[in-house]
Image (tube, rainbow, N blue to C red; front, side):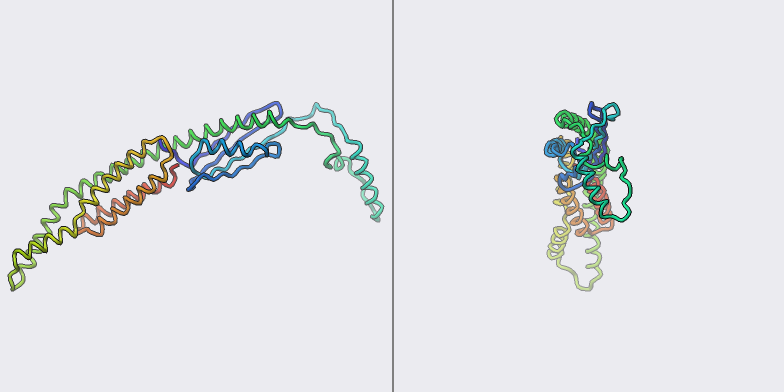
Length: 288
């Protein structure tokens, strides 16, 4: 089943160290392009994150954002690094000596200075394992969303394939009538001439004209490409690029049909074909 490239997924989970959350957004793109944002505690996990995304997704521009909120440390006593605090106070006194009216020191500001408070080191191993596990769940949700949207695209593509098949059958049915009408029109014009036409030469010209306007090959290729589209839609793999190529081929045959048209009806059929093919192409642009 084909997949869309547009989807969104979010997962959140609590751990003993805090709360983790992942947000994944994907849109259409020619290749697989990743934009990853991780908290400082999980910077080392980026290669593993990229590997997991690359394993599950084939195409699309994917933005992956991980957030980490540490657990509240209200029960943990505040510990000061007295050595660092002493050095900071000494530096403040030197600065105060150079100022005419120094402002009093704010203890809260001193506590915010890096290194003044001793902080318990975070064990990155369990946190990284929890983050990657949560990423797997988020990717599952993203893939499921892509598949749901892909089912809609699949149905729309099959509807257009059926419509194109009917137009091709309609054109095949009308071509003999159009050729006969063209022959009658040519004979009528020749009858208006004072000089009688050579019957052998007339047949030659008719054969040449019919060959010039013959679109049987275009019809066969259109039908073949439609069958190929149906087959590709059933594959369980990324098929967006293959479908994009088939849309180009379908459009080429529809253009040729229009350029060889000898009647308004076949011209209209060519226009309708191109409209349907363009609608399919728009869907294909969002297909993985």
